[in-house]
Image (cartoon, rainbow, N blue to C red):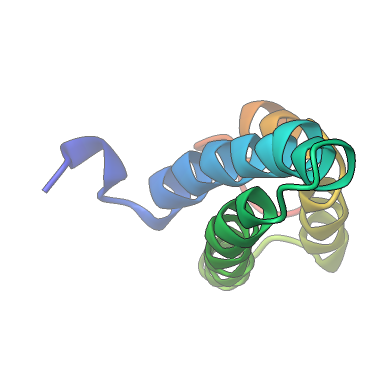
Length: 104
């Protein structure tokens, strides 16, 4: 197993990056292909991948909130950032840091 993905926080940070990238691919590549080039297949594929990553992100966010005793505000901010373009990258870099303790 990859040693850097051992902790729930490390998994959340990794999934945050993947989820953010999949959202950008969905909005920046797949959606234009669907509406400008009339190729809906890209949305089906990228949308499915993004959906799986989004569910994993939410579950890992909830797990970390419980285990690390994060505040409801931090949980809410993590959820809001997950639906904003580039938000998941911000969350990974600024919100989900080791040793940040409880609260925000």
